[in-house]
Image 1 (cartoon, rainbow, N blue to C red):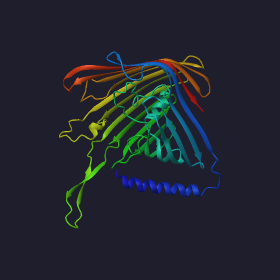
Image 2: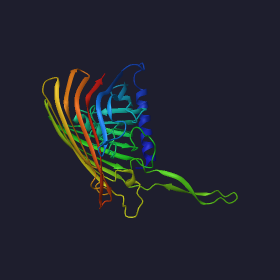
Image 3: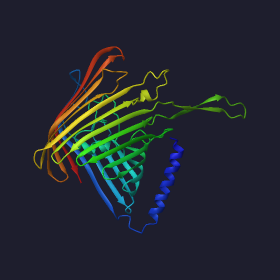
Image 4: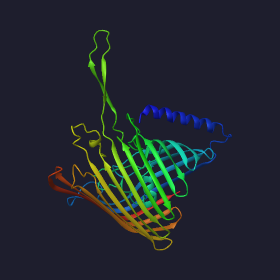
Length: 383
């Protein structure tokens, strides 16, 4: 998609929205403002081992504030609104900065169509999180990577134009045209990526499919090069240095039952050329082409109004062509307690391992196993 066309379209839509908001009845800027947030905290014992030897700063006991979200919503009227949400992580070595996760202006024209411009939620990951229900304990399938040694395959928010809505009794959709590098990086490229989702809910049954296509922000221009030197007053002739890319593609599917006491579901993805090396590969015959897939099975059972047991298992093969023996595995299990509204506690055990093999696509070399284990008390606070 041409970025110039998109920019013109977004600018026109934004001007129309602003004009409509300006025409609304006068109100104080403090009217219809709500403030909220979430905190993910834990005290735990964890270990990160490479071939049985402890490695890095994830070993030992400690208290973490893994995430702090602060959110402000402003409602102009029944159609127009805006939202800002910050994201802070204080985990050692990971994202020690303040980020704008959401910053968008939205027009909800009717239940079947709303549009927002800025950084907003992507179609797939937030939907999967809403079904799973335990994002405060762990990222969902596309983002889970406690070992830190494999590729992740999605993000929860990005900069662009987001449309979506619900139609009929059962169906919902979202389509986002985005920069492709996630909300922490708003840099430009010469194309935009598209992620979409179509979902359905029949009583307690939930079904969804989704897709992603684009260069993930890698379709860019390098420094122009001189092809004709300047002579006298003749200006130099420059040649564009555009990075040729292959599109990354991803397909997602999810099915889940979310009853009053029982929740059970499965999530699946398959991806092609997701890693940057595959996207910008210029070799003859596209020798760095690659595939990946993975699945997650999760469930929970509410024992009493306050106590719920839960568990989950993931399996991911991140490089089926270039490193076909590499494989990641994750599982967790625990018990959750909700003493009051806005507070959730869980005693949880986690295991994440990744087996990486030296050699080539046809020769299986020595194995390196990276293993992460953690047990602790995790907390979510909402206000």
